[in-house]
Each structure stands twice: as C-alpha cells, then as structure tokens.
View 1 (cartoon, one colour):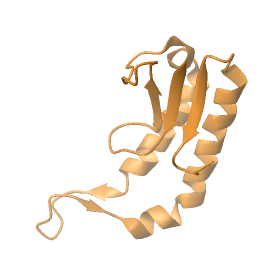
View 2 (tube, helix red, strand yellow):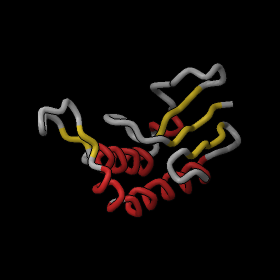
View 3 (tube, rainbow, N blue to C red):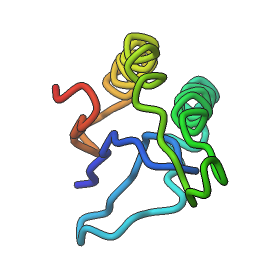
Length: 103
C-alpha cells in the first residue's frame, strides 16, 4: 500500500508519494492524472515557497515566519481540499499522513 504524506518543503508541493518500501515515487498516475490535485499541489507549493527569501541581510536563506503565520489559514484551506480530493479518489490504494494540519 502506498502512503501519501502531506508536508511542506521548499520547491516541492505538499503531496509526497511513498511506495510500499518507503521510497519516494516521482510518478503516481492516480494523482498525476488528476488536474484538481495537481493545481492544488502547485497552489500550496507557490504559497509556501513565497515565504522564503535569499540574500537578505547577508543570509543565505530566510523563512518569513510572520508571513507563514498570516497565511496559515489559507494554507490549511488548500490542504483540506487536497485531503478531501485524495479521499474521493482513494480506492484503498493508499493511506494519507497529514503533517501540515496534523490530522
């Protein structure tokens, strides 16, 4: 059984697919072929990535905690839509582990 982990990481949307052995899968047709999931994943990635900035105050990378806190409800809304859609298309092929909303 596959595991879909929802977690934020820079330059990657929140949907992470792991196979039975625990390896990350780059392609997973059930998700890759779903336009709504792809768009939600991209929307969440763009929002999360917007909190990173580079070369400010001679720092290599800065994460805007205040910006993230201000947009937290928006992020949670996107993740809830992703979870709902995943639940709709899941035919017992995967389990969902949500590390963003902790549900």
